[in-house]
Image 1 (tube, rainbow, N blue to C red):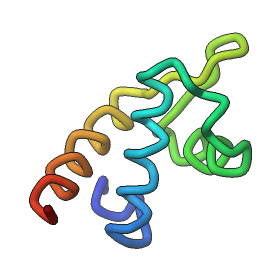
Image 2 (image 1 turned 90 degrees about the vertical axis):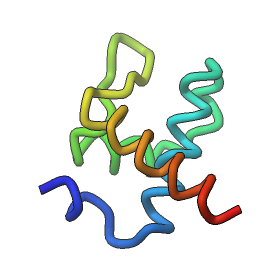
Image 3 (image 1 turned 60 degrees about the horizontal axis):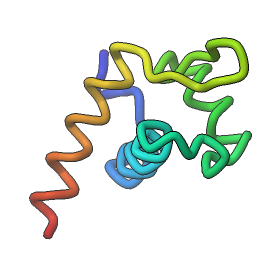
Image 4 (image 1 turned 90 degrees about the horizontal axis):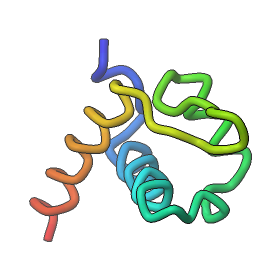
Length: 72
């Protein structure tokens, strides 16, 4: 279930920030340990030397963006 992917809202927001970096073409801003965690959770995948968000990752990024905006 998607609600069990993250241990906390803070972790979802952390993921969202990493996803934002990938979207901006700054995957070097994603620490390797976090990239591996999110690959293992199915939120990101490796495509050659690049990180890409999976469909599940995009959905979670959208949820986190809503949380970030509602928190101010």
